[in-house]
Image (tube, rainbow, N blue to C red):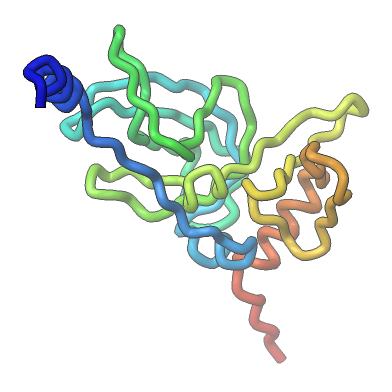
Length: 185
């Protein structure tokens, strides 16, 4: 092998960094509701990158409008891998990004080793809430990204998110996530 080819191969291999992929279990709506330790309708009030023991994370604070499952309190804080500090940018495929002012219905796991809950199924556990022109609010269900509750139908030819009004969506989450109330005689 010519010396020049060998030198180029060594230079190339020296610059190669380990690549990794994100593998996520595909959840049904029912399993998402059952698996989640906490479910809440929230609004992002702050999102900032921090340096943690295990690398760059994005710490996001949410104000809770309504807790649906689990003990959620008035505020939820999560710290997920990824973010940007100076020129250092870390991205994790499938990891949701939250922006100040956005409303979301979050389906969260229990705390990880650092004490932070995660959205169950990464982006699958984050349903964006949008304000409609009529003044109402709805939840976007994106085929292939967010599991859909029974009865949420899609137009086969449309790539646009299906919308379901927020109240109906939260009612369906409660119905699916919470055990039936015991009826006393």
